[in-house]
Image (cartoon, rainbow, N blue to C red):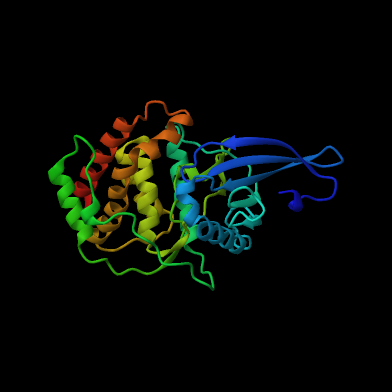
Amino acid sequence: MRGQLAPGERLVGAEVLHGGITAEMRRLTVGAPDGGTRDLVLRTFADPSFATDAERLLNREAGALIYLAGTGVPAPGSVAVDAVGAHCEYPSLLMTHLPGETVLGDRGLEARLPLLARQLVAIHALRPVERPRTYGAWVTADAVVPPPGADAGAWAVAADVIRGPVPRYEGRFLHRDFHPGNVLFDVSGPRITGVVDWVENSWGPADLDVAHCSTNLALLHGPSWGLRFAEAYEEAGGVLAAVARERLYWRLLDALAFASDVRSVARPWRRAGRAELTTRAVEKRLDGYVAALLDALG
């Protein structure tokens, strides 16, 4: 950190940022000799369980941020990366701080939904000269475990859908973890001021990014909002799979992956003020969303 400061600058404050699952995030306030300040953000992989992946993940995100700097997508700028912890206590990435805040409450969602959709369409319009790695699926049909009390028959049908062949798709630049928790808003607008957490950026179908945001919306706000996001994406000019069965494949490939990690997903939402989103409440919404997808697209 010290080597990234201008002459006379010093670290004057640090604040833990909540919401991350795999890494620790801190906002660092840097003071200048003239009394002014600027903020940076430090991503740190301190958890030993992620130590083997830290170098790959941090270098991937740093590369994405360098590319995004010239695209118009509001992403942080990469300041420095210590992917192996040679200079920091743990593998870390230092980046610029963006204004705005995450908004996870139900109020104002009607206005935010088209903003999220337009931002994702803009991300998918990017054409990097050097493509990122191909997306990875986060679940397989045989690994799907329905949450307690779920409709076992519906989940068996859903697992069979993703057991089938992978649909053909036209590749797009994916954020791969696009959802309200990774989008910053100026709530007075509202308008989007930043998109963060580019660790999982990859190449794949637009449907998969839409699916991930849809699942998060369904769990945060109810299954109907998960269904509505795809409509908003198309209204914003985005193009999804033409065949309903293919759309269903991508939506379920994402939704079913949440079943094994609901507790980790719900915890930061509660810390952000959504106390009603207990693990059980989110499991029920996930079950309802899977059923709704099968009804709508099956």
